[in-house]
Image 1: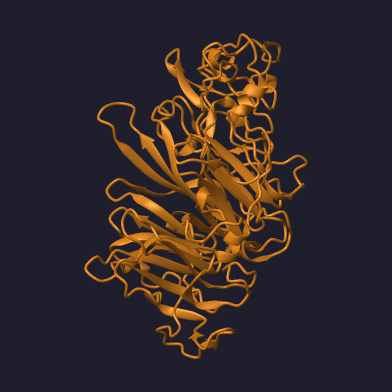
Image 2: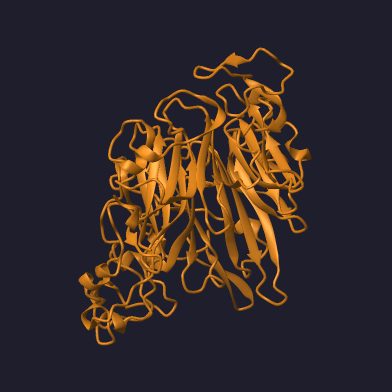
Length: 574
């Protein structure tokens, strides 16, 4: 059945971070706009690539046109631009597609900082039509079967004053989503993950053809006020694929091999993990990256290069650490250090990626970060927590078991339980700041008393709840309802529920908490202290689709912003 994917956003938009073509806050979910442009330029003429393409498959960035796409093998003739563009799906909104089409994209992830947003799309494969002028066996395109299409696209919108959108000039922002191009994409890499701190963007790249032989690359661009770029010095960023170069043995000793300077390296900082690795022979995969306002947590997987295959996990972090959010390994001294007449204040951040945890028995599978705290979910369902507990955001979380998902607002922690012996089989436990209704319960269990009245309901909520307790969902008496995803923003929460039967999803979006910018999408800017279902009929009317033929695919929440990826059947149009 023909369908298409649309992205909707609500909330804060002073810098155009919602990508809807305006800089006005939106208190309901409106469509995001994507700029139309070619995502794949043809290979440059042979004269523009000095010496052709080396055997390694890596082009010299200094000799390649910025719009060039990497080729593996020396081209005879440049593929016609019209043919390559004919194969791509690059619409103003996400492409129309059928369920069997290769051109239907997936929204992999949305990440937002203070005033900028990143979107990572999985692009469809090439569709090979029968017309020989458009890719048949006799066409120029067929002469280049080794050209790997970049399977992902990165888009950005909003503020770029710190260079976080990699635009030229760096300070130029945008109010619609436009392509972000990275130099490593011309070196045979594609983006597999993204994250955003306050004014910093992160991109995890993986080699297209040989990911088992080439380590992943982490690029950071933008603000560096708290060491977010992970630069140990303010000289040009480390060169070398995989975050600082590769090693090979020559004449009985190791020799450091440096890759050529990258185009735009002043902006595209390659984060180095070499100082944490005993050997660079084992492939390095970055399995996850999670960014808060000013600190970052990355999970590294070192894969053995010989049988039997094993995985060594390392949890790494950097950035702000004054409140212990990076764990005891980088906890600051409890008071200023006095050395005679000189006083050194407590360390407020570290710009060096530091090993926080090495786990082989119970690996970490998910990370949640608040403004000043960090929560780790282990594969066993156990929880580890670091950082500030000033607002009780860590209260009782480490004693919980059978947890299947986690999330953090700036000053709160949320745990999804898997209590399968009880109906409906799940619950969300919350603790921390609740003055804007973030804890999702009207009468919180508290010893402090004196709750503050809500502006739009007859319920009350205490500013801080010192006891972890369930969020009050009104529909939890229905056993068939399942929770699909929890998304925590700065001080608001979204939950995607499925009230349908297996094989016939009936998705519902619920929201609660802070709503000053309309980020809950209710059509107003009043806080909600209890989970409330969002009516998306007005949003769907904007694209003239009836409401019964849609499905919410995924949700995300950011700094006063909320996001929905939705699939709509084409034949549901009025």
